[in-house]
Length: 434
Image 1 (tube, rainbow, N blue to C red):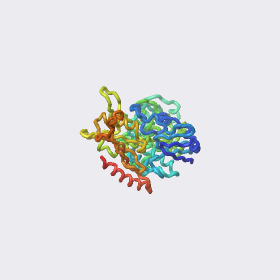
Image 2: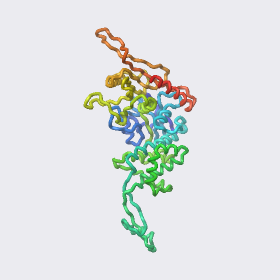
Image 3: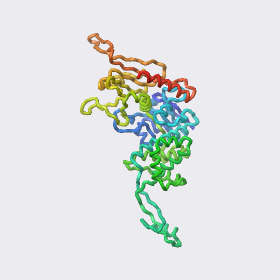
Image 4: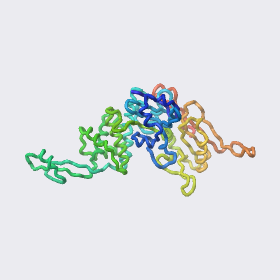
C-alpha cells in the first residue's frame, strides 16, 4: 500500500505526490461541494446558507508546480493508495486530530489514526463511527417508505398471478396460487440495508455502545424490518447500489452510501461501483470551532453559520447577515469571541475588522481570538487606538481590547493517553481567563 502524509495548510511539490497520483488526479482543484457529490463524506455537510460556508474550499489547489493544502484534515483512498492529511499543529503522531474527532463527533476513543499499517482500519472505523450521525439525520424524516413487490404463494390472491411460477411451485395443485403484489411499505430494500448495518455494528466490541447514541432511531429501523433475514446481506447490498433519487429523502441517500461502504468492508476496501476515490474530510476550522464551543458553551451563545442557525444582522430590516462565532451570555458586560484555526501570527487585518464590527454591533468592549497555540507564545492583548495621525494625537484606548488567547497543544506526548492528560490541563488553564 502506498501511503503519503501531509499537513493542512502546506505547500508541497506536485512530484512529492507521485505515490498517490490516482488520488490527486481526481481531487486536485475540486471544491468540497464537488467532492461531496463524488461520494466523499465531508464535514460539515454542504449547506447553501451562510457566506463563509466551506463548500468552496479545496483539499489540494494547484499553484504552479506545487499543491497547496487547505484547512482540511482526513483520509482519502483510491485502489492501494492512501492520502492522510494531518493537523499542522501536531508534531509526530497526529493526536490532535484524533482528540478533536473524539470531542466533536463523540467517536469512541479507539481510533488508531497514527499507525501506518492500520490506515485502512482507521478509515473503516471512522465510517462506522459516522453511522449514528447519519442515521439520526435521516430518521428525522421518519422511516423510509417506498413501493415494493412481494411474491406470494397462498390461497388469498391479492395481485397479479404469476403463471410460470405457479406451475413450477404448485404442481400438483394443492390450493395455493403464485402471485405478486405491489405495496407501499416501510420494510423495503433501504431499511433492510440499514438493519443489516446495525446488526453488523453490533458484532464489534464497541458496537452496542456506539449504537446507544441513536437508540431511538435504531429501534425505528428494527421495528420497520420485520422480514429481516441475516443471510440476504449480499443480495441486499447489490440491490441498494441503485441509489435512491427522491429529493425528500436525500438524507437517506447519504445513509445508504455509508451502509454499503461499511458492509463491504475489506472486500473492495471501501470503494464500490464506479467510484474511484473514497474518504472522509473535515474542515479544520469547523472542527476547531465546535471543539472550542464544547469548552466555552457555559459562557457564550454559539450561532452556527454552517447550519444557518441563530442568524444575526448588522442593520435593521434584516440587512448584513453575520454569524459571530461566540456571543457572551452576560448582557451587562458583553464579550465577543472568534475561533481561529491558525497560528497567532496569522491572525490580523480582515480578522481584526470582522471582530471589531461584531463588537460595535453588540456593544462589547472586550473580545477574544481562541486559537491553537503550539509554539509556546503567551497571550497578546491589543488595545484599540483613538485619535488620528493627522492631528498627531494617536493613543491607546483603555476600554476596548482584543486578546489573542491560545489553547496550548501538547508537543511531547508519549502516546494518546498522555496527550489527553496534557491537553486536559491546557483546557483548565484556557478557561481561567473566562
